[in-house]
Length: 148
Image 1 (cartoon, rainbow, N blue to C red):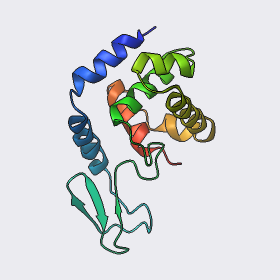
Image 2 (image 1 turned 30 degrees about the vertical axis):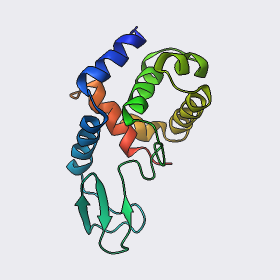
Image 3 (image 1 turned 120 degrees about the horizontal axis):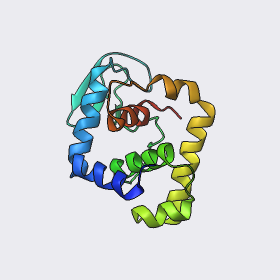
Image 4 (image 1 turned 60 degrees about the horizontal axis):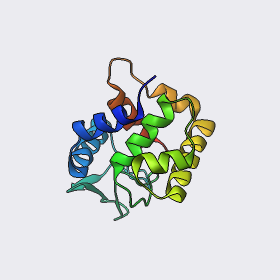
């Protein structure tokens, strides 16, 4: 059984800043062919850490149309929550809130989204796991490829 504090320490040691994790997310997203989340066009340009569709003229980020859509939280917190969700038997939203120092309502909403993701798209989520990759890589792929 993995200790929750070890999970948190591992994530923050691997990605000391939110910017470093955003760059890692961006690199993983660029590994596959990116299409616009609104019109599905492949004519995408990159502006910093955001994407721009040249066909429908819309901008979108890494979290658009994922479980992290319109979040104000650090994406590393989402990674930690997914890590805890996957590798611990049970955690209540109050325990999660206390553990990672967020509001209990926010923790409840995160756990609700993760539960819905696994209930609705369990096979799709499991197909994204590559046993040659590390836990952080696999969980990051689940986060950025999870559709609402």
